[in-house]
Image (cartoon, rainbow, N blue to C red; front, side, top):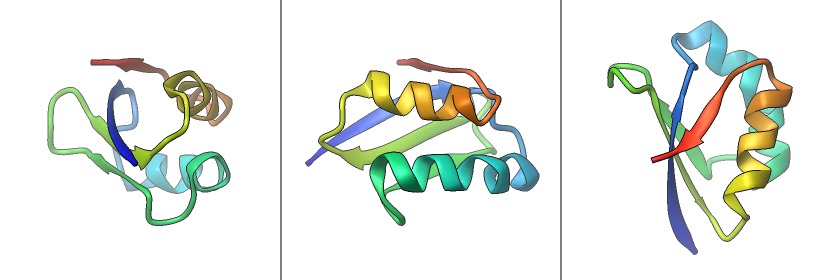
Length: 68
């Protein structure tokens, strides 16, 4: 399992609530977290998924994500 870090536009707890079902489906529950205190709003994912699949899940929830 690898660690993937993405810069996102996920800013607050409400945003996290909105993206949760998308990320849980894409990578699994408890396999990701967002540091909303970091200026880059870093999404850390522990998964063997392709980063593009994770980015797509974030985009489907209405947010932007890009690899660091």
